[in-house]
Image 1: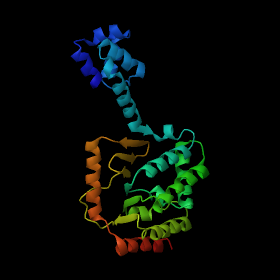
Image 2: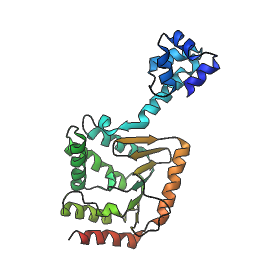
Image 3: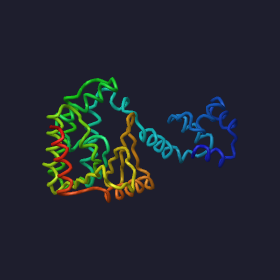
Image 4: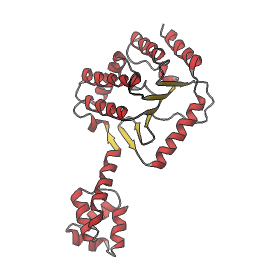
Length: 265
């Protein structure tokens, strides 16, 4: 950790640094072990004690980036889901290419209002957060405008199971699948579907969205993980390329979708 390196470079023991900062040595230990996140004031005091004031702003910026890397959905959605959807809208507006891999649900920019409503109602009930689903759905569906304007590109890989996981009633699911058939021919869209029968050279992953090789979002059950570290971005790009080799495209992908529609009866 950089704060620990600063202390060592200054030739200070943990106890000496604690005295200079005016706090208990246990606090220094917790910060150095990563058991407690330093506040902006803590970083300023630490750097001053080490006579390294020139590093204050950089360390504060780094600490804030770490804080925003892993953010629980309940924290993000404490006032409802609309604000999060607007943040994703901004990400798409700024990105020329969005590469998406999904193993659970249809990506937001492909969702119909009915499908999005069924999904968001389920999430809201599970999390116990305020219900602003109609507003959140409108904000999510608004992302689809980038399929048609601005020169944006959407390269999507979808596990076949996504076509079979039923969200909402059969009519809602069938309409969502038919919508996939509608967007597939768009010049901005490349949709590949990884069939159940594919010989796996890459195991199924959690859904992730890679924006212009500069920002990646991974969606887990409890949190949004934001990745900007170049080495990690490269690993996800490599995984996406491997997953793409297993996918079916064009008519073969359409047959998987129409078969899923037929299975809805």
